[in-house]
Image (cartoon, rainbow, N blue to C red; front, side, top):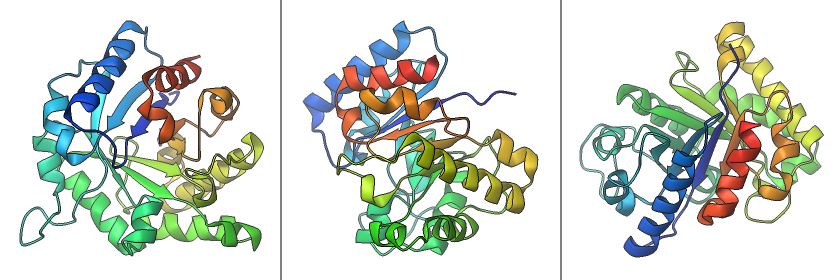
Length: 251
C-alpha cells in the first residue's frame, strides 16, 4: 500500500490565545477545502492544545510537542501522553533535537517517551538527526543508525510510529539538505528499520524530513522515494506556506 504523506507543523514556543486560534482556524479551513492526498497535523504549545482542539475539523489533526514517560506523578511542569490524548491529540513529537540538545534527552529517554505515546494511543513522531560536527566528520549514517536502534521502540509499527529526520545543522538556519542527500539518509533509516523491525514495517512506516522545508524546496524533497512528508518548523507559523507544502505533498 502507498504511504499517505504527512505534513506536520511544529509551532515550538510560539503563539498566544488570539494568534494561535487564528492560525489554527486558517490552517483548518485550508485543510478542509482540499481534496486530500496527504494527512495534516499541527503541534501547538501545550497551553493552546485544548482551545485549538475545538477549532479543528476532520481534515486537520492535533499533536503535542513532547510528553513525559510516566502516566502521572510528581513531575512538575510536564505533560503525560494520557494528558495529551485527553486534550484531543492523536500525535506527539518525541526526541526533537532541541529536546536532546537543551534538555539532555538521550536515546533511552526518547524511546521511553515513544512507548508512553503508544500506551496512550498516540502516534509517536520519533526524531533523529546529526549535528554539523558529526556530518563534517562523515558520521551521519552511523549517528542515525545508533539513534534508530536506541530511540524507536521494538514494537513500533507504522500505525503508531513515524520517524522524522531532522539534520540539526539545518533546523532554523535556512540551510537544507539537498534532495539527494536527504534521500540517502531516509533510505538508510528505512534499511535500519527493516533490519530491526522487519521489511514490512519498514516499508509501511512514514519517514519525514525536518530541516527547513518550505514552499520553495518542498516539491523536490517530497519527490524523493523515501521521503513521506515533512516536520515543518518556521513555515508552519504561516498558513499559506504550510498549506503550500501540503499541496506539494498531495501531488
